[in-house]
Length: 626
Image 1 (tube, rainbow, N blue to C red):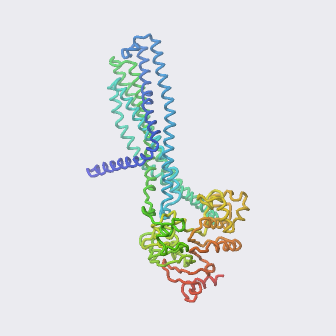
Image 2: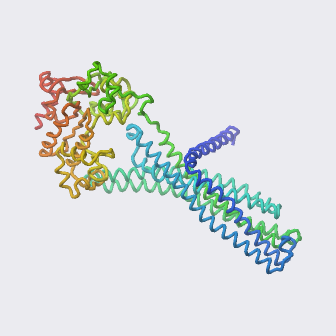
Image 3: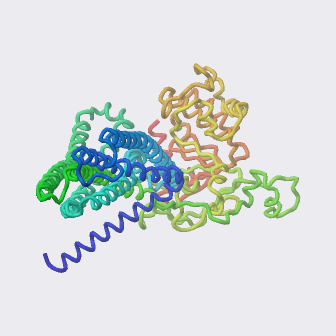
């Protein structure tokens, strides 16, 4: 190996150890939250180590007392044999009792500490993930996120509880044991220390290999969970297109990759345990060989040799445990890296430090700002709310591949505007920008004259309501799916249901508003789910309403019922309607026609037909298809 390669290897190892320390420090703030349990578990190490270390010494003294050897302590030598043995037996029982009791109690404290740390990390990770922009979820598989929030976080708790505290405990025990061994026989102690040097190097090397294999195994597990989640969510497509065997084969291949990778981690883990067993036996054999020579030379007593053999056995017990705990630490470092990747993901869309409310406060009762923003001090006529303005807006999901190009338009308060255009025209992207799920690449979006980046996200999304083509329902009862955790009273929920003409449907359910809905609302029809989405919007009394093909999943009878409620809901509200069926938007005030992210036409239904442009072409094609 050249000098350059040696330096490069040394630098790599240094960087790895530096990164390991940095990763470990990420857990320190969580440990501080449970500093009481951490301090208690550390304090218990002292009596535990002493109780463990004193036992071989007492056994050696018993043997020396029986053989009347000069290594017997003075306070035992001057007593009768039976009395001396009784004292040693009593002290041995006390040491064993202390060790048993404190071991169990410390195990409980350490596990509780691990659970508290795990819960805190999981909570922070969940909160961070739900704060990330939609762009992050576009590129990250759901199964990968689930793996990191569940199994990876579970491993993190073991880093402090089982791993770090266990290693400190083992190191402290080894120091106490070595101190007593040096005081008994320093020559034999030096022999064991010489043997520990290659063992320590071997453990560190194998653990590095274990770390690499474990990281690859965790990545394979993420892929496995992603495939599982994808097949469960898309089970209808899987079965309709007879993909069961094909997908099962894909899953089998991924499962085999994961198994092979985990086999490597098992190999490294087992290799360390087996190696330490052999080295422990060799160490005891070496102690017997050298100790036997010293015994024959009368420079060592039989009792001291017996105690030292017991110490040699106990010295390798924490070393074996240390190797196992080190494995836990390495697995934990892998988990910290993976979880840290998520926690380090920047939150792209944040509320600014000094946000403005401006005319938004008219909706929520902030009178001072209303006075400041009104042109006239006459408060008898309420301000017109709900103006939307796109000021030369450009937007690209990646790089410079713009899907929105220089959009510049104004929607007046209370105006009903429809967005039409072929697939990929940018209709959905406009809605995402308006709701601030993405930030414009260039330009501004203003509502009532205020840049939406100056408005807290919670206020912005209270100010408008979006009804998508497919209503998403959470597992829970009907009323919680309408209120979505906001503090609405039951009377307000009932009133919203009546306003949207779905009160009768809800009352016909088995438990009415308390009827439990399954995940994604699979126990009710698509039309019924959409009706609940309308009630969810109505209860919030928004100033701006966005409908993304909201009546597409309704049958003719239900659509007529909803249309009546929708007409009431749209009164004195600004509305943006995305529609593919052009027959449903004839009565809107204006129609915006989009093509490849550009606004190419606008006007009423009749005006656009007379112009004979893209809208007229789309309309004629749909008429031919009916």
